Image 1 (cartoon, rainbow, N blue to C red):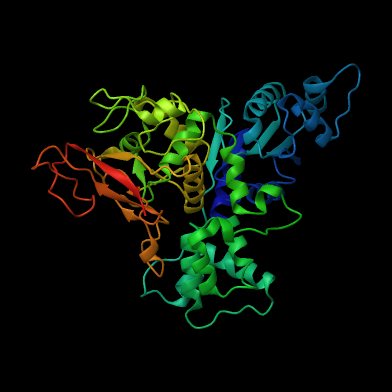
Image 2: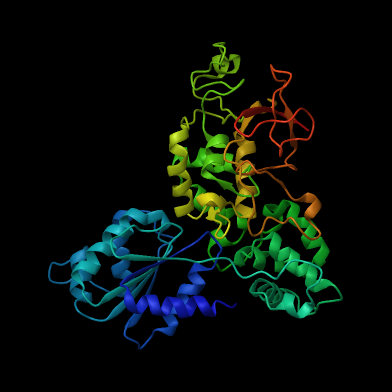
Length: 465
């Protein structure tokens, strides 16, 4: 649905580059876009297109054999593996499409580098949630579908021009042949698409509920969208049958340090910069917060660590069920970049005041991260304190934050401290008693208590309820 501008740009890139990689989060439409692109270049200079699906292959060492089988290349004359591929491709003009490379990124990178070096007329189009990082690779980030403008002043015609709304209506009509828009329904559909950030898989799964739920019912169900957005196509990939499975596919590819930072970032709903991410995600010593050896600032031991073992406590008060790597402040920037490269956070363009890049998690990915964060907490233990850093404050904004329309009352409250705290997550922030009666306070923290100067760090205690 739509994507005309993307396809035009991709055709140009494919003519000028030999390795083109489509990246983006799960469910954004990389495979569908690659299929359309490969179909449009048949008979052109790119040559014959060969499609190779990799989602069912789990051993990178078998990649050459899998590629050979997909291309119909047989072992002949003592040639096998890569040698057989090089001999078969030779100097023929060929386009190979490698679909779903992220779980075999290292093997795909090595194979593509070898084939491109030895087969001068070969071009490769790859889809992956992570770039291959091969010299000469051109990366195209596939974005979400366009959303309709927010606000009551826009009419139905303006709302229906949105790619996301058009996709929802098309899928809803296939789900229920009697589906039709009633008065005011276009605005509800537009709000559903905004709540889903224009993510095609999420929109299709939501539209699939149109036969059993009303549009307002679907919108209300998005308060727990991972439970609602299930029951996808039985013939499609298993990871696309429900939204949580699509995100879990990416989450399982993270290393332990990336997984810890990923779930901690989920508390920042309105976007964040690297300074805000470091303030929330890094372990270390802060006012009333234990360091990595289990000591408070006053040197006292943490009884929780004594009972449960070293390396378990964390500064946000949510301890995983088992040891986790210590997150040092200087590591956070690298991990944030890695999560962006793996399509688990997105960079917010056009909202980079003072030269600081800003990021956010799509709403479905953030909901998944909050679930992982809750699972990491030991049962029955209240969350401990979190330190919010007030230095480097910047407005939080970003497409898809759902701060307007019918869902505004449920939307996370934005913070100017590099991120947004989750206000509807079953917890609330209470200011920690200060040792100084005149201690300043962050202007975007809870409204009780004395004011704070912008260069101080204020501790808040997270409490159940």
